[in-house]
Length: 257
Ligand code: APR
Image (cartoon, rainbow, N blue to C red; front, side, top):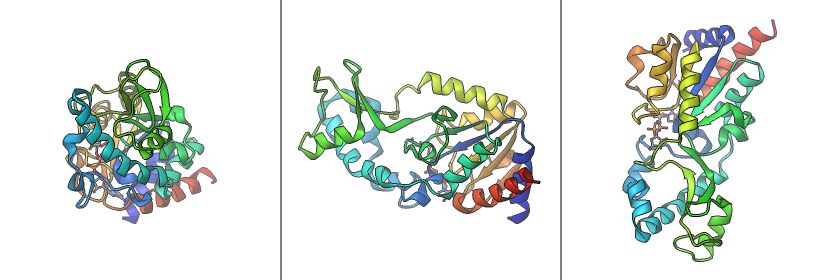
């Protein structure tokens, strides 16, 4: 592991445009379960409650969605950035990171100090909601106050419209601007580092492939094998909260020589 950590640090120290691509595995050490590890979200909750057709199709579908969100969002809300999030933010402060593309909706990269304009959220952000009717915006905390007060299906106070979090549901169109920014960042990168993703959900999982096809080095830091390990230039099997701080320490040593 040590040699691999040193190699990744050297690549980050020399990179012209490094990009980090994160998944739920970067937030498990903050207490947020990932989706596909044993005991993860899809072992405990019905993924069909999280689809666009279910949500938009019926009041009952939205009630099931908000029943699930009422339980899961407080875990995200209470979470704090961990050493991996802080290491990613520090790499940017050291001028060693161009952008962080994330599949996560937990806002932890921003809360760790990464400037919001450097975080590309492919699946949105759970902290914000909007009315699909009139576009009015509400914080997730406002909506949960309505849920706590007994509203089974939150409706817009202004127009009665459907209120939906800024997160991408299965079957929902991906945010075009975020996808375009992510694809551009990946194609312009000379190093892309995947951290904590199973790389099985598309179109997000195309992003590391775009970087590789455009000639970037591909490194993967993940607890378990991924479908892209075979085409990666470096795979580090370990916990993000251990590996990234170790990499950062070596990059910092280079930066202060
Ligand atoms: N350090 C490193 N890797 C970890 C850690 C950790 N501390 N904890 C978990 N992992 C790894 C797991 O082994 C797994 O391979 O992170 C990966 C997480 O994979 P998933 O749970 O599939 O999460 P992700 O890849 O982000 O899923 C993509 O699927 O359900 C949708 O919208 C959801 O954005 C999500 C998307």
